[in-house]
Image (cartoon, rainbow over all chains, first blue to last red; front, side, top):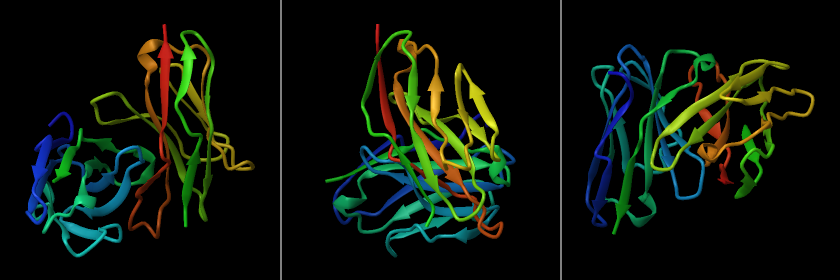
Length: 114
Length: 115
């Protein structure tokens, strides 16, 4: 597609509920990143995929967070047993390999846990 | 670890005023440096980048120079417009053995331009 597409745009979850956030990267972009952006803060790295391989998950805050990209294209970020502190905007970005290119970000999913 | 520090906002300017948003970084290697912009209700957009010392990135009248000696990448514009009102993020990307080139962001600076 023309850009990185994320869905849903907004998600309200009750505390303890599981949620799944979807990211459709730009076609041909092998690198895919997930970031978490708390209100008034800069995005923070969660995890990185190169094709289907999850090469770095050092930013995932707890074992309740899980990401997958089984066919090297669409990725899903799953949060189990959501807590209030999980409320944030979750951003997906994709790029060609190499830091020189910069990344294309999606518009994000705003998760609110009540 | 690697980090980015940028000036706190909000920065409020009148139209046609000069803009400088300071950004300094700490990195063990030789990072690439970026400025991203986030307009209200929209996602992050790459504004400009520089990949090595003394490079100048520029776009839409904005520019920033990669200064290794002062570890800085300040964003400048000579004459701002109301449409430049947004949150600006400084970021760096450092290769870690080629495995991850994740971005490390500053906290963002809100720019409000008044007519």
